[in-house]
Figure 1 (cartoon, rainbow, N blue to C red):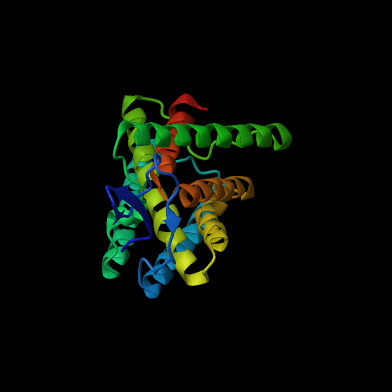
Figure 2 (figure 1 turned 60 degrees about the horizontal axis):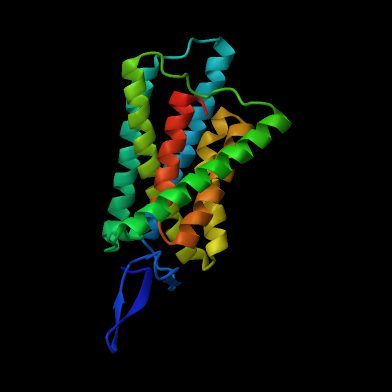
Length: 252
């Protein structure tokens, strides 16, 4: 399935290629959004996220009520990695049911070094923008407490990088790829799609507090807007992965 296409003049003929987002030619021309998975598949997905958000909230409330000691970090990291790839697999399964190619969920292409550098630059710019907004929020509302302990040894450090890379890739494909395209097709509005996927991204963080859930939703809005404008998840994947690495290892 193709979401974006462009024309290119070759000699005296015009050829069409896609899906592609070639930074040399310019932004692609958006086509009418189409479902990337069966509706029932999306409903199951949403139900799972709602259930996990509820369970997380209940577990967090129980921990605070009983003053339980937080579990060791490494098992939590392994669980997070497994969960990220399971959700990606479910998104892929839904796309497969609609005969949507996985690369169409990601979008874009890197035909040359200039295209790669542009996506890296866009990813870096997005990260700087997000960090700036977070810093302003911290100055106004105070710094939010870390929701997950920082790595304290080499194993936890390596696992932290693995979690960051997994989250950067899997979450961008699931939320900005699968959900955003699906909501666009269902609502007919790209703006509604960006807002809805950001809400779905933020709701599972409610158990960590309204502050962090709001930040996650804002994060989803920024990344969703870039994914739509660029017609590619590549800059967002780069920014998301680095953002998580910087937060967990460099505490930025």
